[in-house]
Length: 409
Image 1: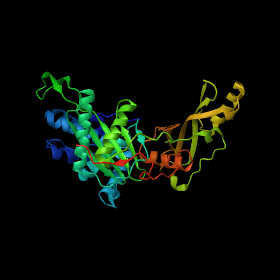
Image 2: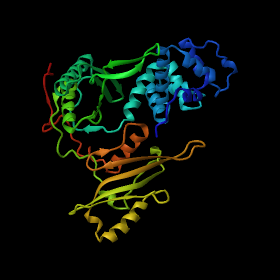
Image 3: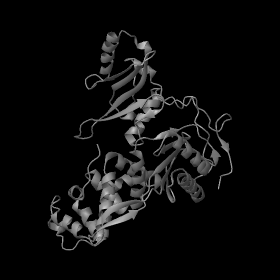
Image 4: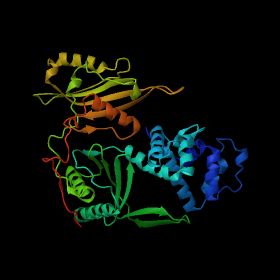
């Protein structure tokens, strides 16, 4: 569950030494007696924030919220990964020596390694979003993205949304690379809106704003796949992947293959299915929390849920009782989706932690690109539940729906 942000709660959690350094940069130290304040005594600190000029207070609020958003296990792991790989600092983790919590670690990076902090914030934001659509079996990227390809994508998206929906007159694109994955954060202009505001003199006013909406593309060089996050029906997503392919890959990617099945869950009908784990996975146990089954030859569905704390396959006991009551055999059941829970060991005095996720046939999954979620994705492939790469298709082989073209202006 996401932690609630408020500036006062953030100041209580953040170490005074880092707040002091930040306040000095903003010129707000004034008469704050830092040397006499306890770590939770932030009355004068918060008062200085409230009395700051509106632009300064707004900037502080944005900065504190950014630090807060990255101050969790996934955010710090992303930050370390970025520092070590993107900025080639193999000892980046040492900058957090002596830090006692995630807020302190994120705050240190914000103050002393801001470029890495900004990169990690972008990646962590994308990693924690849901409702991605994946397109596999794409051509290889023949050259690295540059300003020209970014401009092509910006113009293509702007033209599409202007002609289709009457918005998108501007479209800013931010590009980042993370290992073998490429991220494009596209922000086309949305419809103008009127909002109630208070100006810098605390006077009430109505302003017309031109907000932006977001479309994100993530291309994996190793998988030859594209993940898209955008609002709209399936047809819109097909258009977006086509526009992206023309601008970045300089080819027509064509329609997805009809047989591009990602997940096959039939083996999970049996309680004897083995969730093979290796020590390097860092996973203690796998629990089957939920099964959704289709009774073939009928219009009936059965959804089963169990706590699975005492027995990781308790749901199968429930399944046996249900099958007896329905007088059907398990060979007429089709596993439509499964809810799995991974149990991770605790660290120090912390208890074991868990992570729940859902997988549905043929190609739906709630996993994102956070560190623990990446572990789960690899496990699905090992267990044979993710079969999308089983054919080992070469996306540039004849028969694949891709043809190099001259980019459209």
